Amino acid sequence: MTKSNWRKRAKATGGTPFVCEKQPAHGKSGMAVSNHPLASAAGMEMLAAGGNAVDAAVAMQFALTVVEPMMVGLVGGTTCHIRLADGSHCILDGMSAVPKAGHPDMYKPVPGAAPEVYDVEGQENLVGPKSVAAPGSLRAWCLALDRFGTMPLADVMQPAIRHAARGFAVTPYLSDCIQSAAPDLIKDKLASARLLPGGMPLKPGARLVQGDYAEALTLVSQQGERALHGGPLGDLLVACMEKTGGFVARDDLTSYKVAERAPIRGRYRGWEILGPPPPAASGVHIAQMLNILEGYDIAKLGFGTVDTLHLLAEVLKIAFADRAEASGDPDFVKVPVERIVAKAYADERRAGIDLAHATRWRSGLAHGLQAAEGADTTHLTVADGKGNVVCTTQTINSLFGARFIVPGTGMIPNNYMNNYDPRRGNALSIAPGKRVTTSMSPMMAVQGGKVRYALGLPGGRKIFPSALQALINLIDHGMELQEAVEAPRIWTEGPVLEVEHGVPESVRQGLQARGHKVQVMPTVAGGMNAIEFHDDGSMTGAACWRADGAAAAMGGGLARAGVRFELPR
Image 1 (cartoon, rainbow, N blue to C red):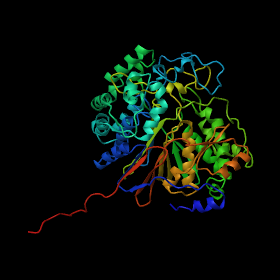
Image 2 (tube, rainbow, N blue to C red; image 1 turned 120 degrees about the horizontal axis):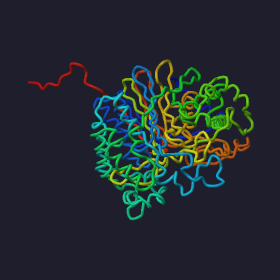
Image 3 (cartoon, one colour; image 1 turned 180 degrees about the horizontal axis):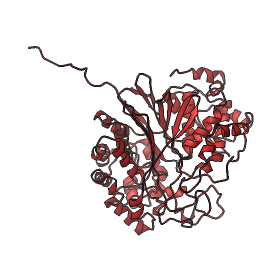
Image 4 (cartoon, rainbow, N blue to C red; image 1 turned 45 degrees about the horizontal axis):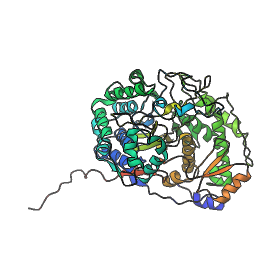
């Protein structure tokens, strides 16, 4: 793939220059990229042992529950995109669901709250046992390994068990996350003892040992997903729920099923873009936005120029105006996917864009409500050099989920009930078994039948707009992979246009002159992890500055056939 001189064009058009902070990795036999170096190393350990990308991905997922406990856990949700060596794609939907005891009136909404605000009295849907939804992550990971992996569960879990039992060094990023959640964490005896010893957050460099969680992981390695979904870990979770008023019951755990779905496929300038379907909102709206942008010469407009960012902002607002109709569990809500991803609908929406002025957009579909989402998630991308690729996002929703530890397990559960509308009669209202909607965007880009890019990131509602921008950086601007994941981002759903600090003041002023209310943010969404696949079979991996991301590559290979080492006689 030919790279273009986007920097020269950006300079000529008054765009946004930037310098990358991290270095990519290059290899041919395997690539593992995640938001923590120990998780990437866990994936590489599996690849070095002869495992495939799925083995590596599952090892990385378990490792991330240890080294990023604020982002992911066994009692959470997952959207996993797998491409096999035969070119087939599969989406494993392991997203959390409303417990069977759930009902539309289970919480008391705060009076007078705006329709898009899901606040309830006592924050019961946000913090504590009543905020926990039925989990799906563990079953999704185990299903992926059983169906597509080659290694035993006990083997792929060894790095996670090791890091939990022996401990690992706390990074500044993890320390800052503990500090942010401290007012809630300190109220839970177990969480406080582990993360806030002496009432103070663990400092960078401190060793975090999670002995009880190591024991829980060991149980899973021996019993599989049954340890939680019907076994001893599930019993401890249910006992905790019963004692504290939570809603998750044994039947929620034993009856949960991972859904296997076909990806959404969009076309953009000769590329095929594949992503998750509903209940994920990402695949349909990335396809929709690319359809609209296809009518413009993005490369000529230049990266990070006023023209380009204004156009991106308008397209994002269109997508969010329509998002409500593609933000529900398809078993409960009719989602007009075909209309949203149609080229004709893109033509219709594009016709309303004013290139000189910001516009207030309404849905071109039936009226609905936006979905609330936690922004604290994690992502990994891994490939084995044999044609297997895994791109997967997983979370416990908010930072440290429900912000307590289940006694006897070391597990921090999700707070996914915060993503449902606590009022009756809306698309996202609570109903037993309804899966949570998500913006998770484990995306792959295919050209000429070959996968060229796989990428994803955390960040709540800001995930799919950021994934879109990375795809544009690669396809339109011709950036190198490291540049594409680190490039300054924007985000808006209407009232305020968020821009990262890397966007120059002159560009911000130009956007304000077109009617955008600009707000400078330290980050838009989280750390992206991506892999690029080259024509010669080699790969480039990249992680960005927004998290502790690291890319690990495996080069080298086996000895040349017939080579022997002999000492002279």
